[in-house]
Amino acid sequence: MTDTTAPRVSLWKRLPVVHQLRQSVGLQRGMLIAGLVITGVFLLVALFAPFLAPYGFAQLRDEDGLFGAQQEPGGKHLLGTTVGGYDVLSRVIWGAQTALAVIVVAVLLSIFIGVILGLISGYLGGWLDRVIIVIADAVYAFPTLLLAIVAAIAISGGQSGLWSGVFAAAISITVVYIPQYLRVIRAETVRIKAEAYVESAKVIGTSTARIMFRHVFRNATRTLPLIFTLNASEAILTLAGLGFLGFGIEPSSAAEWGYDLKASISDVTSGIWWTSVFPGAAIVLVVLGITLVGESLNDLADPRLRTRRRADKGAPSATAEASAVSTGNSLDDVIGLKTPEVRP
Image 1 (cartoon, rainbow, N blue to C red):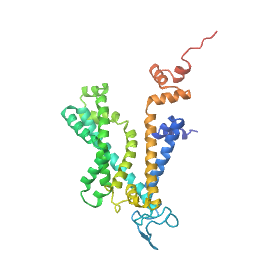
Image 2: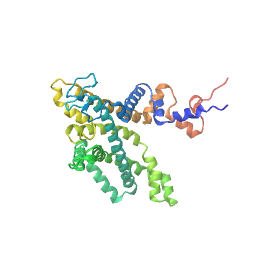
Image 3: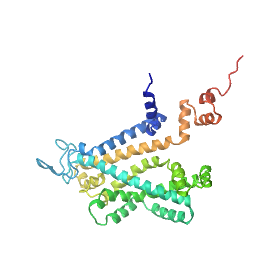
């Protein structure tokens, strides 16, 4: 009887996160697991916010009447109410959904635009490359938060609705991160276009577009997951900064942690702690979780760190693996049978 569970286990082990988790050891594994747990909770809360939040993000009353401002935690309001009369727990939960939406829109748009510009700039070169790099350097020279504020003002322009809500905040953050992806992809493209397989594709008459998007693109974007995780945490901080300074999402459009912190400034001096502690803790935890995942994946992608960990564990090193591949022998032959056994 054929065992059908083996392929499933193999596919499960090949998942990128599982593969990285199996490679990690000690403190590195603990950091990665902690980051994955925190990030997973954040994603679940954001996705199921309509079912988890007891009230709407802008709801001020229920069947019993108004909630009341600055109510202490307990009863119907587990985390209390804000100075505006909103339920703190509901605002924190709905704020997770807002943060996730902004991250997805901002980072994906940044990746799309940055990758396209990086491929064109690095592969074609010439005057077009110089123009794109000058513009990217000029944008990159601005402080991140200042550039996001300028972009938010330019995009919203006093309008309401979609342009003053999540989309405007996402576009503002997109402008900040495009130069980062552009520079990374351009550097990889310049390196890859000199490879032998790219030159061979040119010789046989392959079109420029096909070479760029079939050969160069596939190999130039391998580091994007690492950059994505690091920029996701920065996007949350930028969004919170915009909201705290009054340039973020309108409170009637969506719940946002930075705006809630701004609204709770006057509460701190009055001893009303719950209106600021919980939104602030949400920002810190989510940024910590995503940063732990990104830093752990970045370390695991470094072959020097991977070799050091394997050497500490007594496992085969990367040098031994390379030797096994080059000689055609098994890894056990390279490590354990490198010196032939001498018989008397």
